[in-house]
Image 1: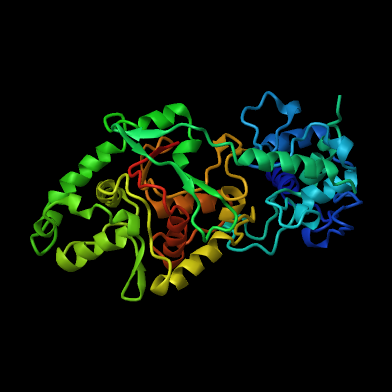
Image 2 (image 1 turned 60 degrees about the vertical axis):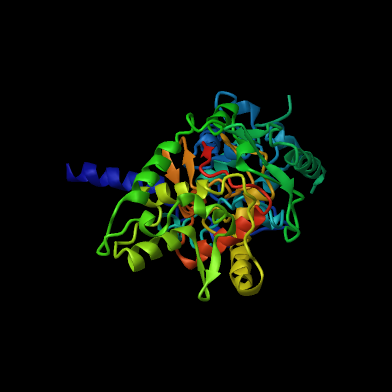
Length: 151
Length: 276
């Protein structure tokens, strides 16, 4: 019984904390705003990325970007550019850079950095020292965005 | 790197923003209220200012046009009761000293203002009366008694143009408020200006971004079915961007209130307004 519980806790830890092999938020190597190498060392899962994109507690990307691929979700925001065909406009390395920290490419943009855990002013305690997404979630979103090709 | 698609899209969304508020005109109880006017000179990045009313749906807009339909008026009635209610050690009510609440016509347009080297809001003035002249306890800054009273007093200025002083003694407070307006905070790392200056008129998920004008406060929100204070709204905004809010009634929010009031110069008081 004890072992079962221990295994469950261990599994939960893996699910919610960054893996030791992930590139840490402040160690991401940007080149002209792009990030060449996967933050997890692996390819992301596009199906998971689609969920992260829509989830209000995770990426909540729909708050600012319309996306025809998620037409089942109501209320797509208009603050940022539409996501339709985004894979045809940007490379994977560019998209990884933009999701990780778009300010490295677009100075002064409103878009939050999704993989940055320090340097914030007055973050709420619950979010202090944390990035909005995990390395895995960033890779999943990037993999998903790479599926959004113009018909 | 190919920047062209981004630039083209940005240009479209910017040109769209300037026309995205609706073209309805507001009339309350048969009296026309101005909801758009030229921006004051101190606003460097905006040409025209619009009441938040212009960004709401037709159903929400309609609720503000008739005082019988306006759900905020229940709270104004509560304010009328409180106005006449004796409270505190001195045996006084508001009406013991102030003959008619209508004498406060115009007050809302000038607040916050500097008194004795400090910035004071309407809430501060109400509590000063309660603690210093009535011998009563101060009301909580954004709770029901206070918002009922600020709605009643604010209503006396309905239709009058916002006109706060920002020079002289007020200048340092105004500068501080302006700095706060443009400072990015929270995990989402956003300033007031990112949404309410750069992107008003666009949708952020289900919400239509306004210019963040405060000429209708306290405002009745359909979201929580009560009157909401200016500082209470600031607090909600900060939490949305995952920032630790400043204190309601604190120096930061008072300075921000002054700055925002000045960005609404020329718009008329709509208190109590109705929003979503």
